[in-house]
Amino acid sequence: MKEKIEQLKKLKEQAKLGGGKAKIKIQHDKGKLTARERIELLVDEGSFDEIDMFVKHRSKDFGLDKQIYPGDGVVTGFAKIDCRPIALFSQDFTVFGGSLSETHAEKIVKIMKMAMKNGIPVIGLNDSGGARIQEGVSSLAGYADIFLLNTLASGVIPQISVILGPCAGGAVYSPAITDFIFMVKNTSYMFVTGPNVVKTVTNEDVSLEELGGAETHASKSGIAHFIYENEIETLLNVRKLLSFLPLNYRDKSPELKFNQSEIKPEPKLDNIIPDNPSKPYDMRKIINLLVDDNDFFEVHKNYAENILCGFSRIGGMAIGIIANQPAVLAGVLDINASVKAGRFVRFCDCFGIPLLVLEDVPGFLPGTEQEWNGIIRHGAKLLFAFCEATVPKITVIIRKAYGGAYDVMNSKHVRGDFNYAWPSAEIAVMGPKGAVEIIFKKEISKSKDPKKELEKKLKEFKKRFANPYITAERGFVDDIILPSETRGKLINAFNLLRTKVDINPKKKHANIPL
Ligand code: HXC
Image (tube, rainbow, N blue to C red; front, side, top):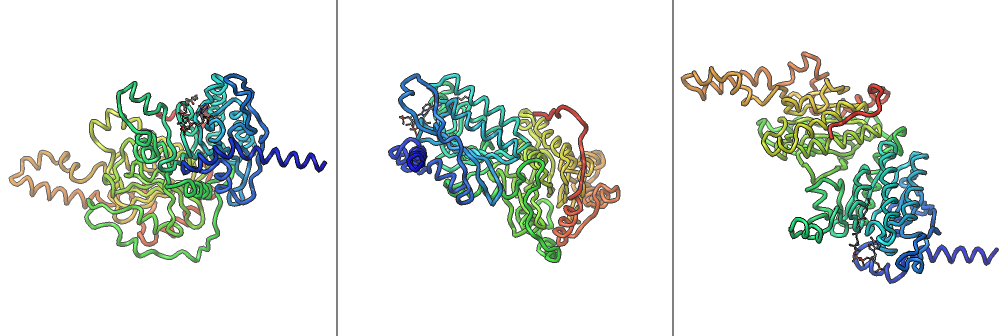
């Protein structure tokens, strides 16, 4: 027996070396960690239970039968993060560049199936040259098996993709189906075709980083939800994201202890809105004063910055926040903002995470660029997402709530549970100037002093509509509240909504305007 134990230990040590010491050195020289070092950083110490360490590929072509590495380029298993279970895979670039073979795919599929059965999140650490070229269609089939499971698992368990190296060709579609993508500056990149193919087909000269690097995907395409300077920071933030999420759609997000007696008014909020309604301010300041410990974990921080989305806690309870950002484009809703927030709302709704909306929106962005690129369809995504969501939903109208955007941003009419307004709220079909110019066009043009007449009408209009009182008269906002008492109101409201049950009509699935 002693001999057999020694043999097993030796085989495991061998498997742990992946492609060998020389390849590990190349990986380190590129500023990248190995598949196993990444796992160690990601999960609770000593919690990783590996499976399928002895799996080998079955290919014989191109001399592959002479190149066998136990584990076949991916480390898979189960571990804990903050004492909660997760499933994970970590691609090993030292073995055939982390490329995906038939058996490599089978290992990933196996942990995904286990994760779905047991209701635990899947985290994929991606570092791969894509389909293993020598295996041809077998590796393409392996990708398709993963895509199918990504799709079936969507909304059942959270799926997180961490890109820590190349991710090219069709391989990008597995992360794209998952809920969140993390990237690392300067070492990870994603694209459907690389710079050389781009040059051949479109004659564009573009660098790897510019085409599909972390900063490109965080700011231009919106593919990356989170980017960080290095792998360590990235992996620590994967842990942080998980701290807000339930294990599956039937579970609840972890809640932190909170003492109701700790609720105090926040006088700074009473002075945060500028007197001039055209003046911008940073919505993040309001968020930080409303939530626990000023801690707002932003999703898509550098993309569509005119809307803010992210996770936080209020009274210990994890929530998702969607807030217009008046400091960027006056907080207007455009295509990218609608798509960003729409997907975030749907994620939170899948996993039972209550929603808080902070509203200061002058409307949808006008112009041919927006119209021709489909603001109608994309804006409808956000509307659809709010209408469909059955989680607790609270809105606070901070300042502007104009036009269709008033309806869209979780109004009472689309099943907002509690809709509050600050006294600074302005709720109308459109901004005062535009409105007055339309409805008093004749009076103004016929007047001896059109400028003075416009000012007079503007004053009348603002007095009548640029406030929250008419909306409150109709019961479309439930209360007009002091900014300083908002945090307490929200904690009470979210507590009341703990037992909320709301269901949508039975159907196969809805048809969101994609
Ligand atoms: C087999 C591969 C491989 C692959 C890399 N390797 N990619 N082996 N299949 N797809 C091997 C290399 O031969 C090399 O082996 C080792 O991995 C490291 O690769 P290097 O090229 O030395 O590394 P580096 O210079 O860092 O370049 C990494 C790279 C490059 C950018 C990923 O290897 C590359 O361009 N690979 C091909 C990428 C690609 O086009 N893949 C197909 C995408 S399409 P040795 O033995 O020398 O160490 C796709 C379809 C999916 O994936 C479709 C799903 C529907």
